[in-house]
Image 1 (cartoon, rainbow, N blue to C red):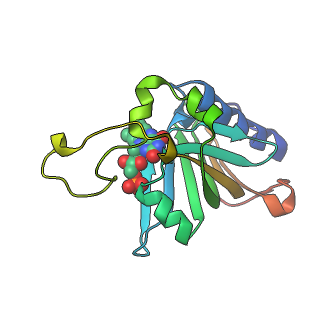
Image 2: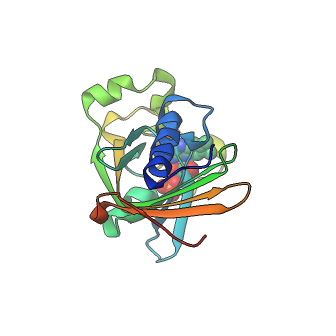
Length: 183
Ligand SMILES: Cc1cc2nc3c(=O)[nH]c(=O)nc-3n(C[C@H](O)[C@H](O)[C@H](O)COP(=O)(O)O)c2cc1C
């Protein structure tokens, strides 16, 4: 990534990388780490697939099983972070905001590749103890296909430039204008 000439260029570079993550399975932003607040109050983190990046709305989208622990967690505490490290661009993106869960629509379910549908369903529910890996029975349950939307409130971005480290914070409340901060 070239040295961003101003805050607008920096923010645009971030959204470009996020969009690439949605479109290209080899892009770094394909697999953010999504962090939530656990029911025990401790931070919980897991890798997910980035399914949508809406720059104008300031939103990211991911898909999950409605019975997964993260859905119970965000129902109690929606505060969440999606973290991306793009090693080639030397760019860290921390997108913080409120994570909401809703049922996927029929049209959205139709777009899920057939081979991927088995991850939305299965018995017992994710995280439950089983006697052995083979004791889990996968199945397609469209009602458990859940769309997660992170409504970003704050983007904290760090670029490891060759001379200087650039860090900026962009906030929804500030209309994403952004300001530089010490790295
Ligand atoms: C490369 C990779 C991609 C993943 N993508 C997703 C995903 O898109 N959605 C999802 O719910 N879990 C995904 N997982 C599994 C999660 O990391 C996690 O194990 C699972 O969702 C259960 O998390 P939870 O118990 O915290 O809810 C992925 C794991 C890996 C390694």
